[in-house]
Length: 263
Image 1 (tube, rainbow, N blue to C red):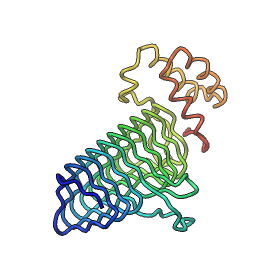
Image 2 (tube, rainbow, N blue to C red):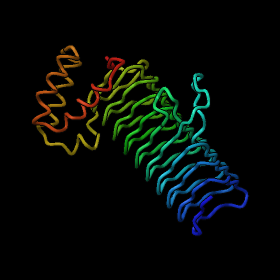
Image 3 (cartoon, one colour):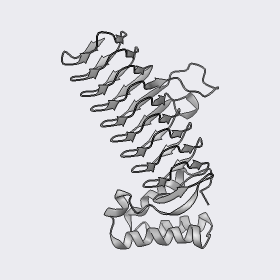
Image 4 (cartoon, one colour):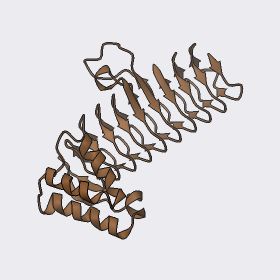
């Protein structure tokens, strides 16, 4: 066990052996931190939080009351093999969130990037890969193996089916049920989710040049107004991405996409 002298730990919390706790970490009352956990500098953990397994938490995170971090997955194929959870820096995790470890079938690791904001009751299933600067609203959940791109926004009470890919800058409206992949910068909603336009509030989209934004609108028009085949759109993206760097997000998306896109 290695606990920094500047860390603050409530007397009622249980810290097992083989735990690393960095400087200025604050652990509230009635928490359980299991063997193998690493917590980075400046992270704050509220009361009644359980952190299990091979879990690494970076710096300056906030974890809300009653959360379960690094529990074993709900995948019935899981047989106790080594698996872990990695959380980056500057994340805000709300009350009663559940973030699960990976499985062998998904590479063994669930990964959360930096500067994400997860509301109360959010669930991140096994083997999910969450990027940076995402927002997930209260009581929304990602099933296993979901890929969530940077700067995505998921509103409250949303459900994302396993193996779905949500592209960079995409947005899901409240109460959406997503069973297919959502391309970058697409606004989707409903049960089952369907395209509702372009998420023009995505930070990368707003920062782009006018001509790049117009190219994204052109691609949306190809996919959803002209009903062009995905392969035709992919070829068009390949040609245009040489001149318009914003389209690299579309190339990455279609390389990952295997469930078909929302229509």
